[in-house]
Every structure is written in C-alpha cells, then in structure tokens.
Amino acid sequence: MSKQRKFLILILILLVGGYLGYNYIYQDHRDIKSETPQLEITAPYLLERFKTNDGAALLNKTITVTGVITSLEEGAVTLDESVYASFIEKKSELKVNEKLQIKGRCIGYDELFEIVKLDQCSLLK
Image 1 (cartoon, rainbow, N blue to C red):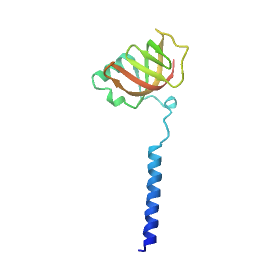
Image 2 (spheres, rainbow, N blue to C red; image 1 turned 90 degrees about the vertical axis):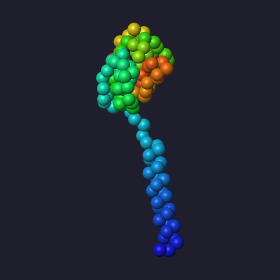
Image 3 (cartoon, helix red, strand yellow; image 1 turned 30 degrees about the vertical axis):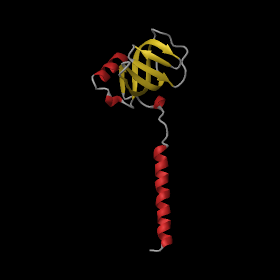
Image 4 (cartoon, rainbow, N blue to C red; image 1 turned 180 degrees about the vertical axis):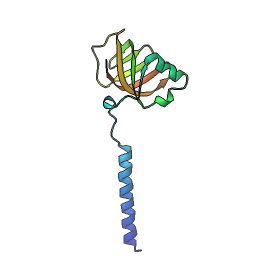
C-alpha cells in the first residue's frame, strides 16, 4: 500500500472520529416540558426515598411532584421543605401555602440541607 493511500485512510478515520465525537459531546438538550413523567410523587415522600437510598434510581428522570409551597425565590420554589424546584421561566403568580403540581428533572439530593433538587420545572396545576 502506498504512502498516499495510508495517509488518505488515516485522514478519513480522523474525520469520521471527529464527527462522531462532536455529535456525542454536543447532543441536543432535553425538553423536559414535553417529556412524559416517569413517576408522580408527593414532595415529602420523594425526600424520604432519597434519605433511605432509594432515590438514586430517579436521578436525571422526569418526575411530577405535588406539594405546598413553603418558600419562594426568584425562579424557584421549595415544596413542603423537601423539594427545591427551579423553573424554566419566572413564576410571579405563585404564593406561599399554595398547593401545586410541577414537572421537572430530578438532579439530586443535597445532604447538607436535606432537600431534593429539580431543575427545568414547569407548572402543571
């Protein structure tokens, strides 16, 4: 095999590898708002699942959580002092002690504050 042919094959392999690597690194972002939730749960029960090490299976899953707002921040709420949910869009119409249902992606459990965190949330009720 000539040097030119080996060089062309090497260039082709590098191009294909670069293309595949680029597509792997820069995947499309998930649209949590349009996904079907894999679980419907109350905020206190969700926290309890993480405290008993049963919540790890919910990481990066789309879930629906029901609870009462115990605190408000700009662009986020805390439900039943158990779940911290950050919204995609600011929600100014929400009030403390209001019951609501949200859908979002479970991103983990904060052991220091003992709270489950959701992001990319949208309001259902």
